[in-house]
Length: 344
Image (cartoon, rainbow, N blue to C red):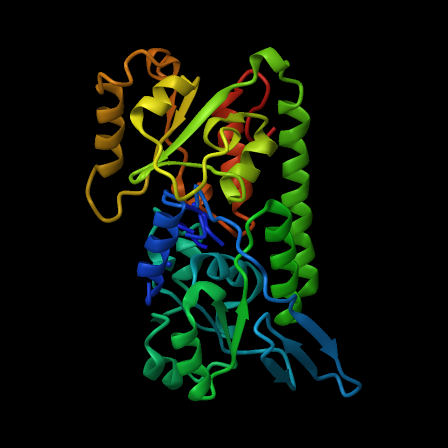
């Protein structure tokens, strides 16, 4: 929620993570209900990060906690602690400027940059301060949900930690990419990423906005923990771009409420979205779909009767990086194939 995942009950996509990137991603995911990156739900922002270039070419940044970092030159040993920041940094920087990545960088179920991540050898957990010291980073990108204790221990060790709020909306995701690109002084690449993202968003919107109101699809998204998609989550924002009626969000259900089978049956969705990530368990996603299709409680809902139970890749659905556009495109292609075809 890419926070990350449960960070999709996407509490501020899906803002789906532990003391380690793994545990934290799971928390984020769980938070969405997702997991919660059904996405990440929004949380109050402390303050906006600030950036200032000095007369000598150096620059200063102030993160959302008010902590100031000074850079005499662009960082050359960057560390990422979430999948979302990993995805952004790997698309902005060459591997020689990256000291280490989040431990989930290599999991194809939740990382969109597995192949690119192979070019960087080190992996790190957020609570492994000793390893962080050995890596000698000049910038550590840390989400605010990491917790004050871990952040304080890093700063006690004089580690260059920049704290940011995980984005929730698509607009916030784009702005986050732009700010990170400014932080590492790769503004042109950041703008190119956002321009591509915006172009693809417009293609989707241009197609699905042609769907007549009476044909608008009713959707319920399920994680292994239950339904997600409340207002204030990344997934809720994604649904607006796909032009679907998000039953959970529009019912005013909070990301802390349990959505029972009876409630889903009453919603009678046209489409069910179900998880694909196996969490290391072989065929977990396939078993989940099989159970849904054979569950007597669901047999009369339209999604099951019409076999419209789709598995969109969780690494896109729970993404809080620019790769969220892949999830939007995949949803549109599966739900409205007569109006939108991915890549066209």
